[in-house]
Image 1 (cartoon, rainbow, N blue to C red):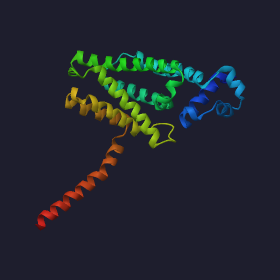
Image 2 (cartoon, rainbow, N blue to C red):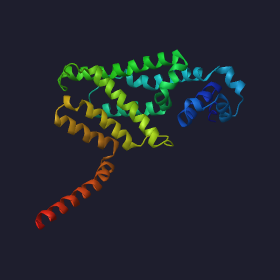
Image 3 (cartoon, rainbow, N blue to C red):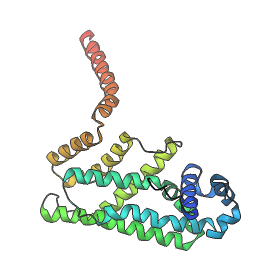
Length: 246
C-alpha cells in the first residue's frame, strides 16, 4: 500500500497562503486575519508562528533564495539553450515573488531586515550576470565594454529592465497567475537589446532565432507583426497611387 502523503506543516501552509495573497492583493492589503481565514485557522494560531507580516516576509526569503540557488551555482555556460532556460527560470521565479519587487519601496521601510535581505539577494543575482559577461569577453565572444559603461552596469540595467517587466505585467494583467510565453520572450528580447552592441550581428540573429524556437513564439511574434506589415503595404500602395496620379 502506498504511503499517504504527509500534510503540509502549518508554517508551510501559512507561507504558501501568504505568498498567494500578497501576489494577488498586495502586501499591505493583506491582514493577518485574511491569511488565517484563507487557511481556515485563527489569527492567534498565525501569531504563534509569526508575530508580524514582516516575519512572514523574512521567512519567504529563504524560499526565494532556494529557488534561485540552483541556477546561481550553475557554471555560466554559454551554450545558447542552457542560457535561455536559465534566464527563463530566473524570470519565472521573480514573477512567483512579484509582490515583493513591485512593492519594495513601501515594504523596505517597514523592517530594515527586509531591505538587507533584498540587497543580499540582488547582489548575488547581479554578480552572476556580471560574471557571465566577463567570461564572454575573456573568451572573445563578446567585445570589451568601454568606460564609463561596464559589465556591472550592463547587469544592473538588465536587472532594472526585468523588474520593470514584472511591474508592467502586473499592471496590464493583474489577474495573471503565470506570465505568458510571449511576455517571457519580450523580457529576454529587452535584455539582449541592451547587450546587442557588444556582440556580432550574426550572434544576435542566431540567439534571437534560437529564443523564438526554444520558447515556440515565432508564429505568435510573426502574427503580431503581420497586421503592421499589411498596414504598411497599404500605405505604400496609397503613396504609389498618389505618385501615379501626380
